[in-house]
Length: 362
Image (tube, rainbow, N blue to C red; front, side, top):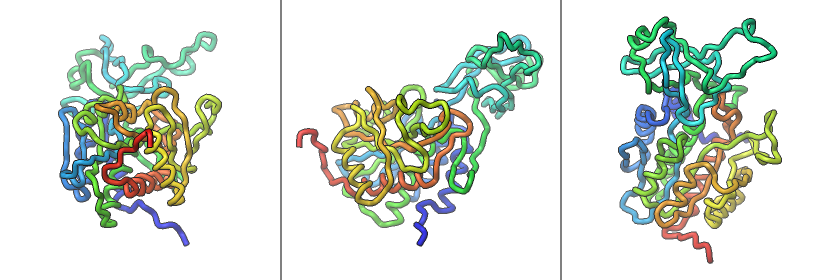
């Protein structure tokens, strides 16, 4: 008998709409509104902050607070310089990969609407093999079909305009989700599905649950820093993506071994509280949810660090979704991993006791 899918058509329709919408760091508001509209039937109220982090709250009157968190922003570029000939040079907004830029289409966000452009690159015929350059941050440029700076400015383009890729969501080989910005709007999607399951299954939690979609992770965990200080949670379970290290040119001796299709990844790191991590592992084993393990030196590089070290110190753990081709326009995850991660967070919430301290010394 086939296993019943956690995802339904409504949730998949939301996923496609949510991913196809641009949500660059610092400009997440439209995506956050889509997320809140979807989440509204499953929560009691919302909290937002001045920079755009959105939190759906279940049981807001409970003193004991549990956070499940993802980040909402995607990498992008800023217009940095416009030449007299009408070409645009850029700087990063987050960890945008210059090596994939050449020949990509782009959307330039202006007050007059989207302006289409392309990252140009010299034709192979014109490049000298002995001195061939690869794309670099200071050599890639955008062509918007103009011949002067004045023409560019007439389109509404100016220094500071944000630039995103228009690549859209599709499903490959029935079970692979492919799109730009799966890092980490898949996380926002998954925590929303946890809220949906709690509602649909009639589960009453003995604590306040704060479903948190933070902004500005790609530039240093900034949204999580702000909201963690405001919420002052007792527990935080963070979800983000990690690398599938089985594709070419990745050294498993350095990066470890994790792969799409083998289950969500539970991380070992100083910021990950041991007792909370063990609760996740015990839940996965008890509920027969496949999972993998990974280790992070010093920091996890995710919002886990912001929550763990905020205020008085918050027991925090990280569950990652294995992903191929991070920070490209063809990021790829496995549907079964998505469903397993949703189930793991859901079941772990049901295993947390009200008032549990996860004391290090017990």
